[in-house]
Length: 244
Image (cartoon, rainbow, N blue to C red):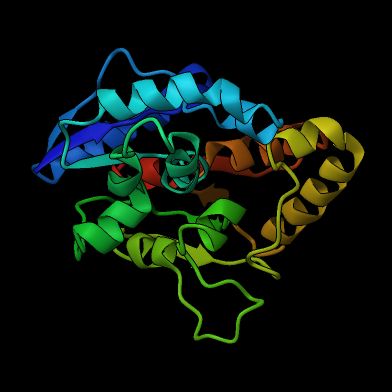
C-alpha cells in the first residue's frame, strides 16, 4: 500500500509539527509513505471565497501529483473533504478526477481503511474532542446531532486506544466553533462570539487539552483562549495518536 501524504498549506506554514506527527504515525504502522515535494494549496480558500475557477489549476496539479498512490492521507478534515467533494465538479470536462476517490482525513484512514485496533502511544491527560463541521457533516467522522441516528465518534474510538488518556466531549459536541474559513474574515464579531462560547464549553469539561482533526478550528479557539488568558492547551489528534 503506497500512501501519498498531503499536508495542507496552513499546516505546513503554521503547524508543521502536525505534518511530522502524521508522517511518524503512518510509518509507525508499517506503511510506505511519501511526501510529494511539489504539492501546493488544494484551492479551498479561493473556491470558498467565490472564485472556484481559480482553484482549477491547483486541483489539476494535485490530481496529477498524487495519481500514483493507493491512498492520499491528510491531517485535515476540511481539506480532505474539499478535495473529495469539490474536485470532481471543478475538474469536470477536463479529465476524470482520481485524487477525490483516494483522499481521506487521517482519522478516517486509520478508522475506516486500516481499522486500527491498537496504538503504542501514551497521553496521560484529559482531552476534550472538538468535532469540526467538515469532519462531521461531510466525512462522517462523528454523528451529527440533527439526525436521529445512534451516536458515534471515530475520533473517540481512536483516542480510546491511547494509554492513560481521559476523553471528554463538550455540551453541544458538534456545534461550530465559528471559524469557517472565510466566515471568520467576513463576520469576525460573530465568529469570535461563537468561538468563545465553544471554548467555554470545552473548558467546562475539565480538560487540559482540546483536540480535533482540523488545525484551523483549533487555531481559531487557541487565539481566543490566548486573548482571554484561558488556561487550556491545544493539540491535533494526530499528535496524540503518534505519541507526541
